[in-house]
Image (cartoon, rainbow, N blue to C red; front, side, top):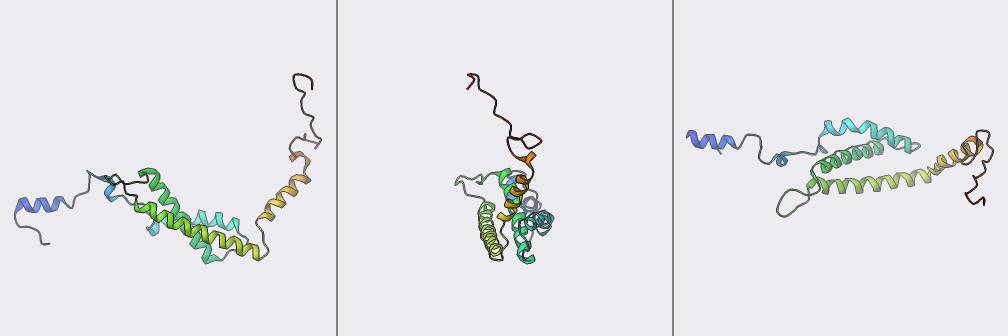
Length: 161
């Protein structure tokens, strides 16, 4: 639409281009589609996921890390603004709908990666078993033992039982 030539009508048209101070949430963005915002969060998530899996597929790991970064941004947005828009109908933010989709995809892929790791013979439970063996080998780490590994007697109760 061409700009009006009349000063009053032109001022009214230009007022529409000013920042929205009346409804500040109208232009709020969650950043889950922003390449720079997501990429700044991908590396920490990739490191965390790499620690969970023995030899993950690099492309799959990158996709999962990106999804985790998007979930972080969407959750931050929803924590700040709530789940529902401020409208008479109480509609859900599109960010909440997108978060649900990203979480579902993340969970499906995460489960598939765990299954793939189990089939390859690398069981995540092996790490727990290794920790339990280490605790058993070091008596000072055993609950209810003193520094020498001797079992500490329970303190008597008031009744002397």
